[in-house]
Image (cartoon, rainbow, N blue to C red; front, side, top):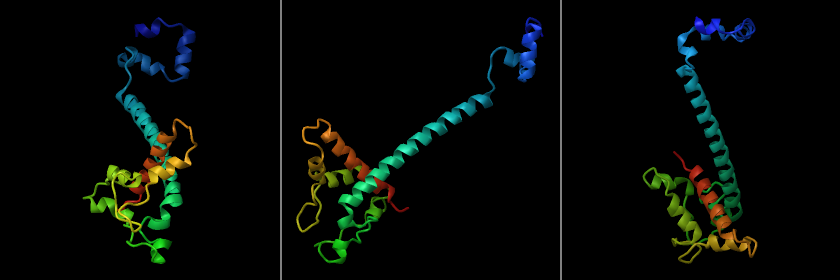
Length: 173
């Protein structure tokens, strides 16, 4: 083709060495077109990489929420969130804590994310601990942050959200 003839012998040898000679002889490639399979391959690779990053971040959030749950919630709700805790076994609670692995099932298959958040942060009262409200974890977690830290409220929200994401990961199918 005229496109190949215009190139020098040295360029032609380089192209042949990398297997590009056949592509330059094909008018489709000579116009700079990229085959659809390559386009889809790149798109698929980008989606997979993006998903992997998201999955890694999600795993970190859940792990952090698990740690917060074990530190603050497991004493009443049990390590696995099923309500089988030391406090329950010793009969120290006036009401048995709910099985937190069944929240989605009890809510028509959808995890009540923001309702759970409001319960944990104390804005939605629940019966527990012999009083109309469970411990207000928002206040407790806020007190644990450094005083004078302008980001303390955001950190507290993040910790609460991590717990909710962890509880969402516990849901049985």
